[in-house]
View 1 (tube, rainbow, N blue to C red):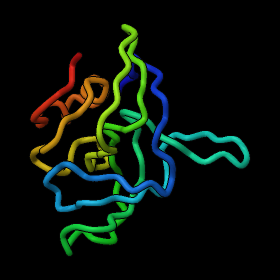
View 2: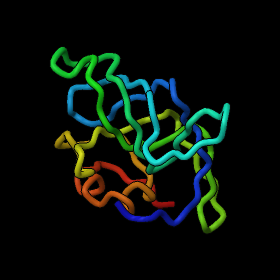
View 3: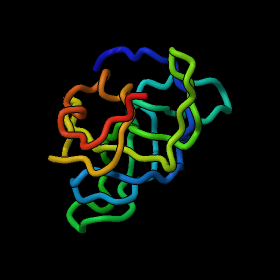
View 4: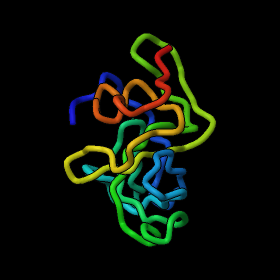
Length: 134
């Protein structure tokens, strides 16, 4: 896991329902924790693009349902600003399931992902179908 070139606005809190876009068998995930979050009293943990979250699988394949997994946030509906001044937002919040060594669990990604995720997790970029560069 590498450092990111942006300090993104964090648009996903604990309790958020996000969609899984890889072929691991999960469809909907509920965020239960954010990895690396060092909080302040009475503030909800939140994650942004490229953030690692701990999720519970709410719907999907019977084999993976109700399992606690790690995931990387690849798109968010809250707009964020890139270093070149462009503001980007996506139509939905999505994530990709990862293993403990930060490699993806699935073999292919069906949706779009942001380029910030690829620079932090190159293995996700290798199996991605579409990467938003603008």
